[in-house]
Image 1 (cartoon, rainbow, N blue to C red):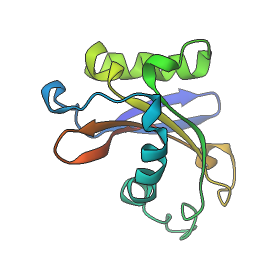
Image 2 (cartoon, rainbow, N blue to C red; image 1 turned 90 degrees about the vertical axis):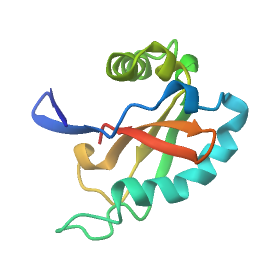
Image 3 (cartoon, rainbow, N blue to C red; image 1 turned 180 degrees about the vertical axis):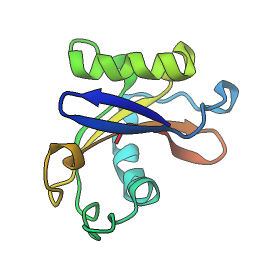
Image 4 (cartoon, helix red, strand yellow; image 1 turned 135 degrees about the horizontal axis):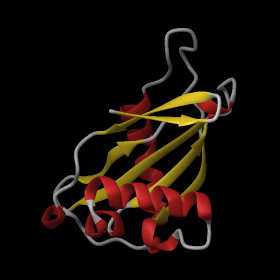
Length: 134
């Protein structure tokens, strides 16, 4: 588990486990529709439906970004996430992974309303989240 201080609040990040390179399937932006479909299950598995005081906070969500990390160039914020992915699990894993940025409209405040997850596709098991920034 990692903690990052972003201004006036602390963000909790969780590295689940670095993927094994040989087990990953090559993907491209052509797989975006498949990623969006997989998010219906992955978001529930990653976030659940809510937290104690806000039991349904994560039941509604919007995709802000869903793209392979190599395509994040030109956007400083997204490039920063690519840098994080390379730091945590290496360049090869990062280059086979996706950045998904989410908006949770039921959440009060920016720190709960935004989510970032890193995905990859296993040759055997399909899409999975290997890192959750929020």
